[in-house]
Length: 503
View 1 (cartoon, rainbow, N blue to C red):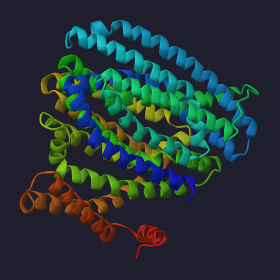
View 2: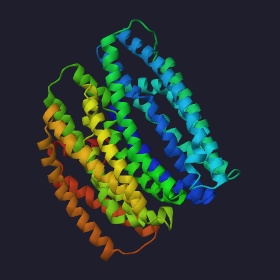
View 3: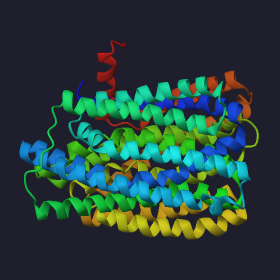
């Protein structure tokens, strides 16, 4: 099995682990530290997440250019681009620290109206710890990018698996003696420090990476800067979509409202991971295709092929959540989180359009045309912010989710599809015809599943929930295989079963 397929499988293993662990982990956290402390931890996490974008898009640029030189077997170029990148990461790490300390001084003012004095004091402690965590991440990010560019996904995703398993175990052990949001942040930071060190060791010991400055290339720097700043701009607006709503709610409504929105956030971030598990490993491959100047028809074929597989999976989760989401949230988080169901749906349904096309983002990065995405994403982010503040004040978390959903369907949906078709020349019309035919099958599954859940199997509880979701998954898989998949996709499924010796 090649590293790309292995990376996808490990990504899905991590997603499954994340879902299972999250199902157990969040109620345990709520039990140990309570709703307010959990909301405080999520609020500080949302605030500090802005510092993660201070990578300034360097990671994507390193992967793109390092993979390009690797495809061209240019070892001098590989060493040179890493030397330039290390200097860049050093600068942004210092900048992150400086801005972090400035923000730290204003936390009292920002949250004075919605938090108690003790909550503000603890928030400041958590903020400093998470800031240190970000510094660790930024200063070693270049090594993660190198491992990605070498397509060593077994190690890269394996480290993520270790973190997924170890972190909740260590957190629970620590919380038994020190039940606080600060303890959660401390465990997260220590584990990140250890795993970051392991990535650095792997790069030098196993990949034999060399970092050496050979020459200054102004044209290369211009291209590198263009891609890096474009990815940075998109990352900045990502925080508007995924974190600012929680900060708005924290300011106007307090930590309880943030906790409700955070439950929805955990669900839609896992939903996003289902898609990026596939597309996330394809940037080095797509960069190689572009470097070799393969025809656009090959890229269109890849775009449609990956999009179909992503849609099969996302449509299962989306329709399943429509049917069983209320029961899931009730079983998982308990009472008081009912709004999380509506918030989740308002975001994941329009978000699906973007997620089944995100291989297009890798194509744009490989072509170094990501600046258009940055400009459109900026405008849609501004739209989200302008809508989220008044809607959040009037309707709380649901209002913020409406703002995000509208913004995504306009920017990531209509405008990006126009660009893919007219400027990149991908076969968008063919893509949507195929997605439309698949949607007819998923629609039938949704109607059958919803009716069965409401009228034939209305029982509640963990046992009936697991049984019903398993039955719906089986129904969906059979319907998709028989009525939606094309011959090539069926042959891939059959080949996989033969390799597993399943008859």
